[in-house]
Image (cartoon, rainbow, N blue to C red):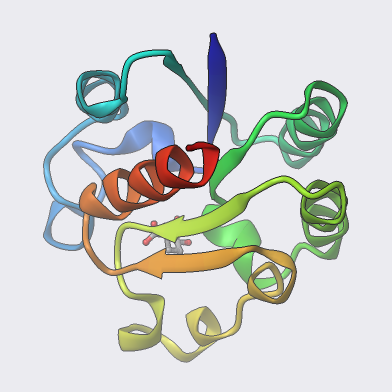
Length: 146
Ligand code: DQA
């Protein structure tokens, strides 16, 4: 059984009640249920969320050690965490997929969100499609794993 890590950064545990006009009304549990339903047979969804940068970095190290592909919504860490960027880089340098996803389109929002320090070391980026951003990323992981 292959698994995919679906990692979520700070404040994403508040989905459902957090700015529903921007992020929609679905919760992280809804997202998990949806991805589990969409995952092809043999692919397990391991969805996690943390507000803690160190924990998120530890999960990326775990991805390297277990050769697990990653779908990552770094949330606000996207815009300034060089430590997270270095950890993300370890994943892609190990030849593993790391897809950066965003629910909203950061480029259509405040200026500080226009910069991602993660994108240059990610395999690719999907943003602006609500929870579909994760579904599209999952589809890519499934295709790449063959
Ligand atoms: C986000 C966009 C970020 O700018 C923001 O800080 C988030 C969520 C998104 O999924 O749209 O927390 O990553």
